[in-house]
Image (cartoon, rainbow, N blue to C red; front, side):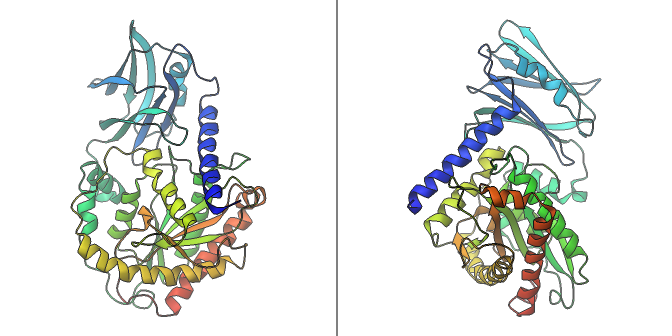
Length: 416
């Protein structure tokens, strides 16, 4: 199979995996009498999301009621069906925002959805077009209305993102860098980024293994190992099944003044024979291979799949950005090489050099950043390995060994 054909096959695999996941969410199938084909609720400690998926874009009106606190959505030109009727059963007891949900046929052409809340919220509602096997979506995000955002860096960054101010923050210098040399005078700060999450499941293996679940487990293992080191400290862009926009992941790393950024993923391909681990870094001058370019395009679709209401692409000072980032990319390549060589000791390498492309999640201009494709979740043997605690532990150990080797070589800048 040629490389271009292989890439097309990989895209088809990802799309078909999304379609299989869709059907699993709505097992009763699509009701002919209604446009709504699936309802999903994603609770998290930062925000909760309700998604209505439909055959066509939904028309709606949204308002709030008090005593008790409620959010009401009137969905026009549809009829109540079994999918919508199941919304109440989707509310989790641990959801910090939604107490219960009920739905009814308000009039001949309108379905009313009512969410009773546990606290006062700031509600954001928006629509998303079809992508990767997922149909039109109406999305409602519930944030705490009066939360002390200074106590929650992620919540503060999401607020900036929703106000379209995050790109401005990305283009500015970080807060004063941590003093001293990382690993000698102060702990090395590492931001771990488990890919995907929430609405974005990532790739799905033949045995229904979801990338977002596996990489979160690996990241948790790696964080525990890093935090046991006397000269290291780890943070995570997400530590639960929640969708975080790519730019917010980068901004959180800068907010924590991280010395390194590691995004963790599991690759997929139509050919079950494709296998091996890979490491990628950013390129601002074009991808170093067709495969890297395609992978970057696929990973950069996470925001479209996971669902964001803002693009945030404003106010970047590209001249300063590119000058700083060129130096950072060189460090990323050195860091990636150390991690790749350690991964080669526990698994076949898909490619023996660090590949490059325009990965949005690697665009912190002042933090060496790599994306690790731990193994092919589409390969039956590697899917089996990814599900095991032993292999997850080995991957985490390999990344930690690469971090140690990178700093031992003196390649890291003294005070990032």
